[in-house]
Amino acid sequence: MDFVPKRILPKRFILGISGASGVKLAKGFLRHIAQDFEAHIIISKGALECAKYELKCDESELKAYLLESCQTTSSQVKSTQKSSQTKANKAKSSNADSSQMRHSKIKSSEFMDFDSSQSFASQNLASKDCKAYIYEDSEIGAPVASGSFEAQAMAIIPTSMDCLAKIACGISDTLLTRAASVMIKERRTLLLAPREMPLNAIVCEQMQKLAALGVIIAPPIIAYYSYPKDLEEMENFIYGKWLDILGIPNELFTRWGER
Image (cartoon, rainbow, N blue to C red):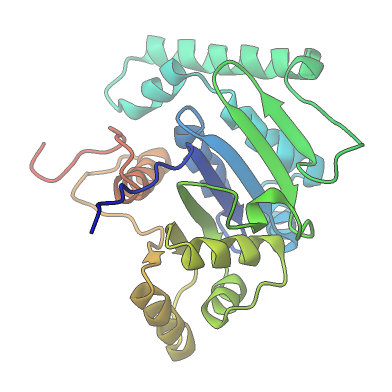
C-alpha cells in the first residue's frame, strides 16, 4: 500500500470567544498567534454581553480591541515575554503601542476593509504582519463553517458551559458551535478553555466525552512554580501553556527547572 503523506494545512487559526468571564484572555492569546497565523475570529452574543461588563466596551469597540492586538509587531510581543526587562524598555513598548493605536484610529482605512457586498467577515484587517477576520456568530454560512475551509487549529477562549454542552451534544446552531463541530469531524486540533468553578457532574461528563474525541480541555489555570509577580505574568503563563499545547514556540513563562 502506497504511503499517503498528511496534507499540510494553511496557517489559519480560528479563535472563538463565547459568553464566559475572561474575554480579555482571548485578546491576550490572539496577540501571540496573530504574527504566525491568519486569524479568523468568531464572537458570540454572550461574549458581547461579558465584554460590556468586564471591559466596558460595546460591539464595535470589542472588535477594534481585538483587531488592535493583531497589529502588534513581533518585537512588541517579544518585549512582553521578558519579565526582567528594564523600565526604559517597558516605556518604549508602551509608547509604541500607544502610537500604533493612534495611527490605527487616524488612518483606519489603511487597515480595515468594510465591504457591504460581502456577507461574511464583517470586519477585515490586513497588514504586512498579519491578516485577521471577525465573524458574527449568526453567520452560519461563513467559510469557517465548512470542512473545506482548512484551518490548522481552533481555540474557544473562554468556553462557556452552554457552548461546551452544545459541542459535546453535536448541536451546531451558531457559527461558533458549527466551526467547532467541523474541527472534530475533520480530526483537527480543537482547544476548549472552560471558565467555570466549581464544575458539576454534567459538565465533567461532557468534558470527558470531548476529551475522548481528541478535544483538548485546557482551563485557564495558573501555576505557582513560575513565581508570577502580577496578573500579567499569571496570564502569560496561561497563554504560554495554551501555545505549548498547540505546538507554538514561546517564552512567556519560566518553565519548571529553569529558575
